[in-house]
Length: 165
Image (cartoon, rainbow, N blue to C red; front, side, top):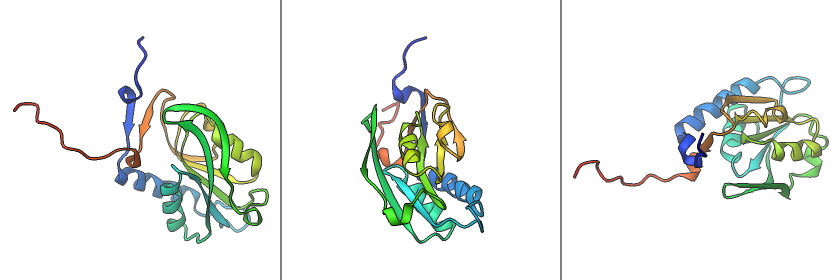
């Protein structure tokens, strides 16, 4: 088997698709918070989790939204996860009632780091790869480990020359 470039086994996600899948995630999470089923807040894992977190927060009518910024990639090269910005300490506590949302769990290193900080938070992603699944509590779609997901914020529409001129 030959090594593939990331775009050769790509899963292209449109804005419409990420919106539909994020709404499906919200429906799955509705009423699943601790106690009375309500979530206290949504924390988006920046940057990829911001769009799904906004949609989930809207669908579940959650007004308290914060972010945690974790750097674990340089372009398409994975590195050690590092927290660049943390959410409000008073809000977070041990994570009880907090919904942490990301676009994708890949290796699981980012969520593993966040889970070590907030062990009682609920971790939800729109997409999941097998290596990262143990770090996520809820997700919508599983893709193979060797699939590269192209999110709409990573792409641009452009003119393509016709096949025949």
